[in-house]
Length: 302
Image (cartoon, rainbow, N blue to C red; front, side, top):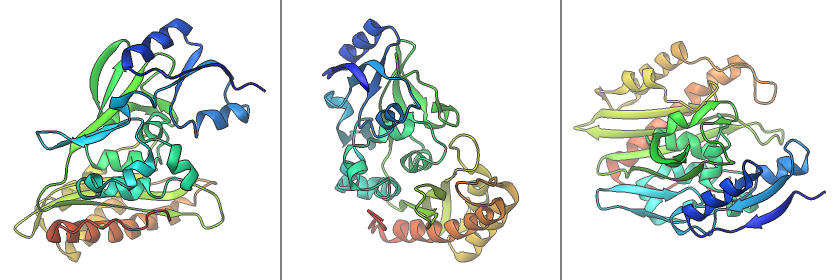
């Protein structure tokens, strides 16, 4: 079975948009292809007249720190590239940790951070970290280039804001972690060989005079789309950066966050317990990194 008829490798956003317009809905964007091509092969997605490969567009395959301290991360940057980046290791440690546990080495070598977001699954590892980093996405939507907050990129499970036959996700920007700021990511997987996380958790904190001045937390999947645990963040702000504050935040999380039972992941009560486990793992790690300035990712390739 042919998965596609024509394959194009544009070298600019404009050329990619022209190709999509030419095929009038019969072409799809592709980067790593680790989701789309598998779905076509398994009959869960129709074969395409054309694939438009965006991995030859320079601004989509690079990352750098801009003059104002923000990070630019192209949507076609691979998970392996992120893991190997010294800049992102320091500036966005949770993203490096989350991309380091995506699939196996073969998937990480070709799969992209933009694909992780565009697939719009509520448990995307890289997506979870981008939410905690308060990223915004640069997109071409309905013919207009614009910036969209990361949480607005999702309409439902597997439902993206973007139409892959006409819209393009170009990349992301977020503030690099500065002095007394740091992040961390952990996840809990099923041990029976099912490649689905029970839960993942990304956190970012800023410390001031021994207190948690600010915090951002994303725990997924809990709802139909990736989101911030804002009530837990609020419980942490202004509190001492110590175990008692973490336990107080966990109590709030247990009251406010209610993951459902999933036959592929775990029961609701078990997943509820794992919220506390993940917060006890990620929050102290991020706090310690913010205190010391030492950002050494854990669990890469696990």
